[in-house]
Image (cartoon, rainbow, N blue to C red; front, side, top):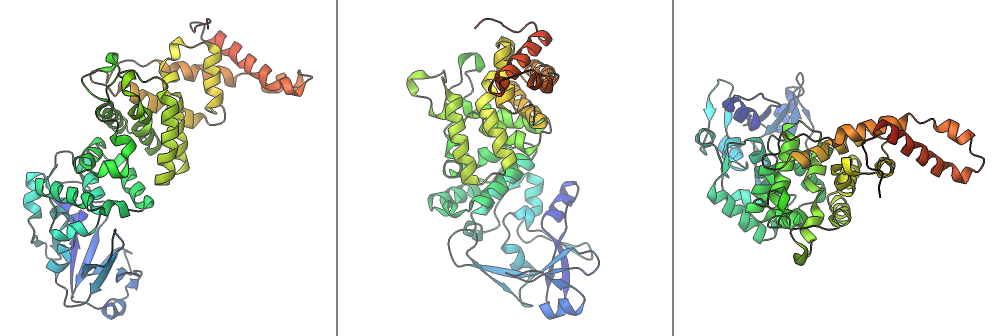
Length: 409
């Protein structure tokens, strides 16, 4: 029995990065051998065991055979005659197909060390094409390792996989999982650029793919299109360390611009309503978590109003606060303001441009929360009039707190 550290732990150590988790492969052993040494079996599709003391995962060396479409159509073979090289051959990228022996010896049969030094994301072999999830993974790695590029032959293979329809068999939960991880990487735009380069973005997220080539309004740097602007927005959210719901909102808030009639370009009249409809469809298709879905719907609907904060009447400001449920969900509203700030600053040369909207809306929310709703309820003889009286009191509070706001229609 021989035990090797494999995969991401070896890669990250060679890159000088912190190691998050360690995976181990065991060569020359049977399940009975592992159980006899106190390991506990947990794998169903193939033998995986938990170490009796550390609870780390140890998998028997295995090979894979494609049996159907998609990423679940595989049969596994794990036995003592499977070599380390056999096991490494089934892995996705050369940089993930390096093993470290217990004596410190590196086993690198597929050139992973050289690709780490050259900054290249390259598939190990033809088996890469058998699993469409690997397209998403390589795109996510591009977002994490920002100085790495995808090998030309790997991009060509991914495009062939897309053309063959493999990505159409990906289930929503797995697509969401990879998108969510990619959005939380250092430069998430690279994930979507890689997916677009191989044609996968048009199949997995066509609403986003349509933004590329759609012009921006003239005052918003016409030298970049709406898709490029969106990439700047999500990278701004990443630099600021925003939470996943904010990054997701940054990604999808402008989808409606992709359906603007050509005759109206570069203006995008009414794109917020179109964005809300498209966002709802995307979130349902990806089965996005509620906190991500709700925030991006708010961003799609209200980001235009929030951008125009200084031009709004007090009544309009209060209407946004009420319809966005800011009084009951102030933390979510703060995330909405974060997403809007990323949208505003996600333009060339605007990275540090002052954006007054969050401070204005925060001050307005503080004023509205200071309204004594209980007193208004007690003083209103007709219960049907309570919502209107409450709204009027909130508008008056905002008018007092922010006298610079417009009063005209």
